[in-house]
Image (cartoon, rainbow, N blue to C red; front, side):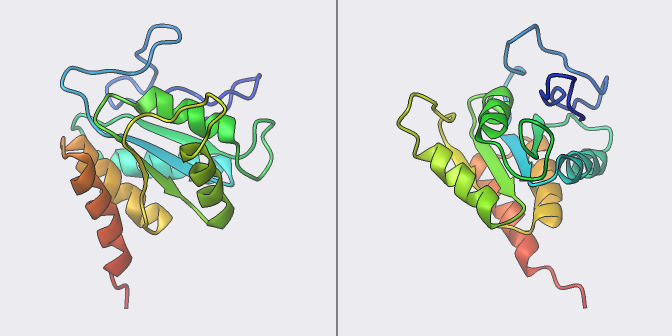
Length: 166
């Protein structure tokens, strides 16, 4: 999921074609809908790679809508409220949106979006997942892809916090 020449992120990852299956400007929607996932990192490469890893862990199953929102609008290190907002709108299928952030200021940017009063509205039931970024992303994407509801998706991400590596 790289940026196009205008700095816009590439489309939602889909396992069947590896490309966008939406008509121009329309949100990605499938029958039945799933919880959408947005991965917010200060680095577009980290967000994109994490999305690819999580998608690979789903295997040949039906991938939930996942969008990387990394870096700034002009491709630098940082976060972009515009990229995050656009990603949340694109993955929203009416079942909630789980947002994972890599560190502090990414969380602050998402919290600011959730409290926006300037007309920019996040999808209903958009929630921040309190989880480590990579492990949480895998748990969230796999669980959302299995068709779980938002509470179960959040719990799967948060369970990654307790996984001991040593």
